[in-house]
Length: 468
Image 1 (cartoon, rainbow, N blue to C red):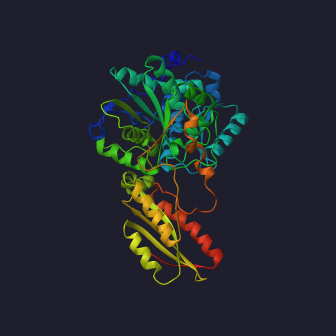
Image 2 (spheres, helix red, strand yellow):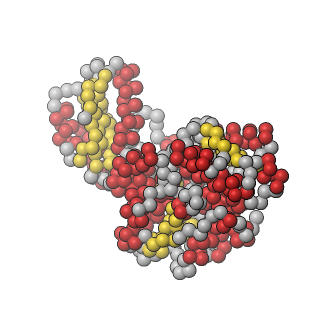
Image 3 (cartoon, rainbow, N blue to C red):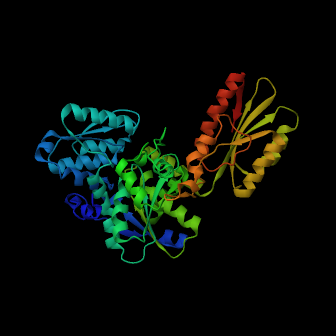
């Protein structure tokens, strides 16, 4: 397909609106760049997904419309299909994972579609939707991997080019299945080839980054669900092809960095995006800081604002962590006189944020789970090494990203970034002696570590002695 022509011919404006490209004054001053935010959260369904859904459905024959449509979605695509179906006068069934936030499936119901909650993941919901499609003769509306969907999403890039005539360094785009970034890249690279198109993914849902590194589509064993709007295990075939040809790179960001960007967006314009909606901004901030970018113009797409209130509670707790990495550590102390005093003297160098002491009933050692902030970079490495030498075994929870700092992956040079591909596979199943820890939310990290510790102590016959 010739995507330039397809984007220009898209019929999205029967239901979608041209969204504003707003200058983020506070963030621009802080970062030293001219940062613009493309407000796709202002669409009628609070997400860009309406564009692609309507563009495809508007091309269906009357017979296809009479037979109805069906789709699988984690939320935003579902609302786009539901509104498009109402506009075109056809019946719509939306299959959503059971983990879908209530705000999203309730919104779909209000638009007149039939909602079926099925499966624990998007892939399970999609399998069921395709089965129903075959049984009932409906038309399946895919969320990202179809030329008409891609062309519809590409109108976001068309608007940016029209709205910003001057120099433009890069456009940062959230990446799930790849429909939005593929459409934007296919259009922008034809009319403004000097503009960088940079995707942004959560570090625990990085299917596109891994696929670009491998040179072929990679299926994740698990996709993190915090930014559920981009939680896909495998990217689209056509979207991957377009990203290989046109996308300049991918930035990976942590959950904490996403939360920090949600807070930034709220402070900038009192808008509260959903996690996937703030993803591009998190990547833009990380990129600008990492490369020391100054004086350039960059665009970040605010892709959606269907925030679940339960998620909002978590978001409120994590943004400061996103700007100040924490170490989450486990130290095995020998059960001997003076060991705990020595540990306290060493650990006192950190700002303590969490602590738990678990006894070993055999009397040989105790497990201390502890977290702290303020010691980063070389200082944290020194502390970890010091604890490891003085106290025995000190380990940390390893996460790919340091909060607020993304890893830039050039699509055309995958071999230069083996860490993206191999980091999890390279870690042994048992905990290693010293691992430099990057930021996870301390609470979430401690939960994981506590589960591990509980299993270990249960097998050894130990029991928790208390927590603080």
